[in-house]
Image (cartoon, rainbow, N blue to C red; front, top):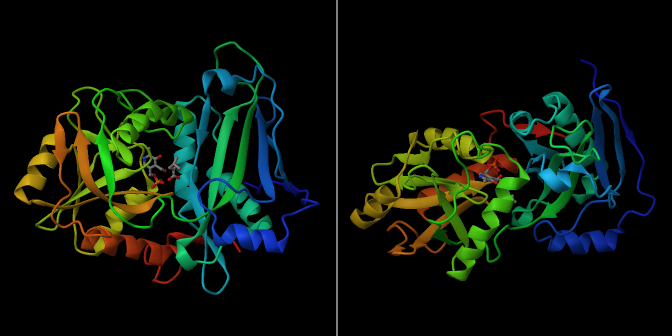
Length: 365
Ligand code: PLP
Ligand code: COI
């Protein structure tokens, strides 16, 4: 298939160098946006068309725009990393493209061809390449591709006009205070996903549904919320925006199986990296009792969570209505030893400091 034609209209008033340097010195997460954005439209008659990079700016939406009412939407989260030689790379972008295709299928949205997805992301990163921070402090350019029902129509059916966009935002650490164990709140009232639901799709509704549970976590003094399966309320699923891992004293790692959780690209990568480091990973159901008993007996050494935005984050205490599960014995100030090794192995590949043995990196600039 021939590549997509993408027009570029440069921003006539890009952020000046002094201001850009200020932003890149302390980017935070999701607050500053680059000079441009990418947009592609879809209709049943024309398919995907009118791909363009234009100056970043607000959208004008009809109040009847379907996404505002029925949340027919999917999104992705990925990052561009600057290597020491100045080159810019993304991490397994074809996996984000494939996941968006799966999410789109679940949300009855049209599928954007994975090659076109990667080309669109590359086009924006190339135009806004000066926004990719230096590797120092593990900064990156967070990329947010998203697709939404842009038809102005209140009937409940798949939209006949869909818009795909990519925006970009320089990012520092997702959690303030650097790498240190996060505390979790176990919600027993709310669930994230049921059988046949949208748990495996990256769609806004899942995040909307997580917010009240996250509020509950905050009210209990915890950093993040952990969800259990909807059917039995026994099996650990994932956090609001991260997948989970449990390291046992015999070197095994367990991560909850997929189906109702979001299939993280970091998750899949860590399964491969951990294997290479000599730690076999079991993907299976993992009950809250196994967590509690494993920490009590010392069989569980470390717990950690991972995702694109938060990378690899050590998990400390788990609180629930009936009490508390302490941080596992292997949890240090900056997390457990293996958690740190896995984190390092991953970021070293992403920042080009280690050999890319799995062929994960994709050069953009
Ligand atoms: N689970 C949820 C609910 C998420 O939002 C994310 C974030 O992207 C993840 C897991 C981790 O996925 P990935 O590693 O692809 O970023
Ligand atoms: C990500 O890690 O990319 C996420 O999507 C998590 C959150 C920012 C939604």
